[in-house]
Each structure stands twice: as C-alpha cells, then as structure tokens.
Image (cartoon, rainbow, N blue to C red; front, side, top):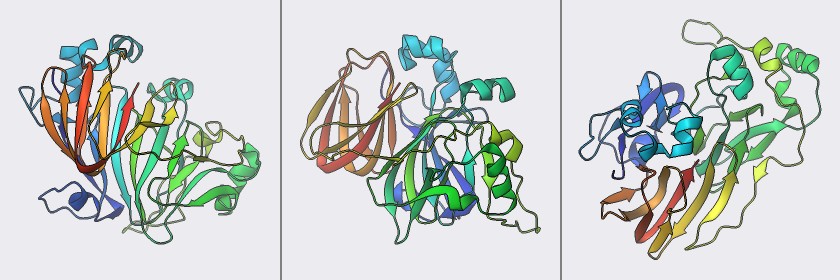
Length: 322
C-alpha cells in the first residue's frame, strides 16, 4: 500500500468564511465554506481517494478491501471495520452554536453510533477570535435547562481568546463552541452525533430558530468544572511534540526545518499528517513519495514502517494515529 490523498468534501454553512479554498490552494468557486472534510468515513460523506492506483475508491471501500493493512489489526477489530477518525478544517466567520457530544455508551444506546471525543488545533485567528470550552462554574442539570430557557448559558461557560498554535482537547460530554474568527483543524471520532445546546436565538431566512436538544444533552454533559481547559505544551523545532493522548487518538505537532525520519515499525495503526504551514516531500520505506503542502492531509496505511520528511524550507503538520 502507498500514502493516500483524498478529495476534500467542502461544506457551505451559514457561518462559513472564505479562508478554506485559498488555504487548500483549490481552484473552485464556492461561497461560505465552513468546513472541509479531509478524511471521512461518515455514511453519505465518504472521502474519495485522489491519487495512485486506488483513485476513485471511497474510504469505506478501502477499509473493506485492505482491512488491517490500512487501519491496523487492533483498530480493525475494535472499530468493526469502520475508519475511526474524521479530519476537518473549520473556518468560522460567525459564532457556531454551543454543543455537546455524547460518549460511546450513550451514543450507542440512543443512535447506534460511536460517541464523539475531539480536539482543536488553532491554525489562524482574527482579532478578537475566541472559543468556548467547558463550564466556568458548577451547575446542576436543572440549572442548565433553566439557563437555556433564560438565555444565560454563556455566563457559565469558560471563554478563551485564541491564537495560532492553541490546542483544546474536548472529551465527549464537554460543552463547547467555536467562536467567530476561528480557523482550526479538528480531529474527532467518526461520528456525526451532535446535541445543539444553544444557538443565540438566531433565525434562518424563513424566520425559524434551529432545533435545540436540551433534554438529550442534559445527561450527556460532564458537569465537572476544571481550572483550565487549554492544552499546554512547549513548541519545539525539529522534533515531535505530543499534544493529546487519549483512547481515540494520539496527536503530535512537528515544526521542521531539516529532514527527519519518523519510525512507525512498532505502531499497529494508520498515521495521518495534516499540513498547516509550508510544504515537504514525504517518502515511505517502500519508496512511495509525494508532495504535501499547507491545506493537505495524507493517510499512511498501517503497513508503513517509516516516513522520511524533507521540508521545503519550513513545514508544520499534525501527526495523528490510534
């Protein structure tokens, strides 16, 4: 097997901006692109391979065909032949709704789906850009429902000004929202189960407000209050820096100005690179080589033993695997 690139799935949204198309160097006209789904096995939104002999196949077909060679032996068994991660770029020109995602147990019981634990890496932020993550004070499920009703839920949410390089880990159950001016990379479980908590009473063009899932979200929320919801790390050049390690993914950031050989011989998993700055050439142990530039993602199959990264000047990318 060889490293795979996929055709992006561009989603126009009411809150979408204009950063994704130029960031990804795409030659297309599409307005208000809020999301680019880079690698997806969500039903109805399966990514299509863009390169090599498997071009034209979707990710579901690839997993069915290559099984543990693509995803890793343990992953193939654990996730019942589904690709376990969904990779996105998100460009918010307006505040997104406030949301929470159920954990695996609740999502399986209610929706026959995996839950959704995710993380954000801030690629860009305009002046005043912010994110909400977690509760700033202790509340009960009853007070939560009351605060939705009287429009005061934002008063008890932790709100953070953001800058490029900021990282937030969002385990299932944590209330969160992406604020206006945020441009982020999102890594999450393959799941589309979202409970909308609050939408600032916005109306669509027909004058209707969007549905809220107050009752469903009430027992999906983790009401624990933490002092700080940011993920803190010390940036370094020319070595990997781990950002998040959880049961669903391990993610590191690499900021390289010189060549690096990354060893995956002991890893029973696929590996994804999400490029955020600059460009590089990546070459696997079988001699398969491709160019990677800002706005692109590449999936290395579990059969990959090592990857040689040759930066073109400077390159910054996220590395994630299960």
